[in-house]
Image 1 (tube, rainbow, N blue to C red):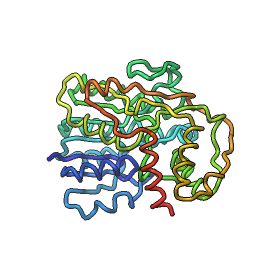
Image 2: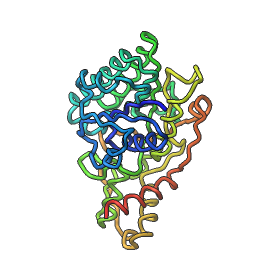
Image 3: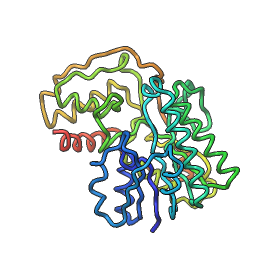
Image 4: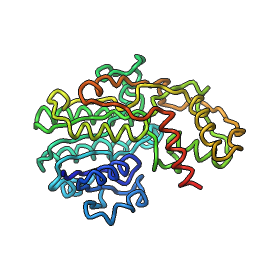
Amino acid sequence: MSTLLITGGAGFIGSNLCEYFLYKGHHVICLDNFATGHRHNIAPFLENPNFKLIEGDIRSFDDCNLAVQGVDYVLHQAALGSVPRSIKDPITSNDVNVSGFLNMLVASRDAGVKRFIYAASSSTYGDSESLPKVEDVIGKPLSPYAITKYVNELYADIFSKTYGLETIGLRYFNVFGRRQDPNGAYAAVIPLFVKQFMNHESPIINGDGNYSRDFTYVDNVIQMNELAMNTTNPNAINTVYNTAVGDRTTLNDLVHYLKEYLSAYDTAIAQVEVVHGPNRLGDIPHSLASVEKAKSLLGYRPTHTIGQGLKEAVAWYWEHLK
């Protein structure tokens, strides 16, 4: 079995990766500063002898250097997400997402890590209007956050070519699922709407609700990380992949799904009205991924459509938010 470092391992996606790879018998090191992650996400793993928590910050090279010792694979999830947060505070987003990323690359190179797999972002497609999104056709970034995630890809490419560090970037498309935080100013749309519906509060849709996204259940993301870690195909490394389902859902359709699934637990939710507000600065109108590259080079087969994922996510939230 391998030793994995999962940065941001106490976060939403990171803790799901910790749980899965511990279940598979790997040794897992979690590096997190708990800026956006939560201790309760990793509490079940603390008694596992194969799990180690390092409380540290990727902005500290010493912390990064300590965390990568003896590590085979890095799954780099640590970042400050959210387009609105990056617009409000671009300096901190850059410090974490660019300087922290570079720290992790250098530390991984110096420690002889076998492969560096990192969370890239669909925001990299920027103002490109082509659909579906294909990996080698991008536009100009529309937010400071998008710039930071694009810079990550550029740095990873240089480290592959210059230092021989194997890298794979996974461009996540609107990931959702268990442990995604519904609280805070920058909560993602699905957990936020779920919480509001459960409280019989009206969710606010930005715009007319016809913006669409390729909502991707977290189990599909776990599969992509595992495939990226295990691939022996030389053509599959030192590149980036869309990590999505290959289907798009409007915000209006999303609300319809959520009301339907939540009404199975509380019939009053079906009557909750939705409010429409202005479009959000930096938002792209439509997002739809081509997953053909991942299917062909990694053998990716998404296990969950948005409907299947939402059913599982709603069941989890109903159990944990009540």
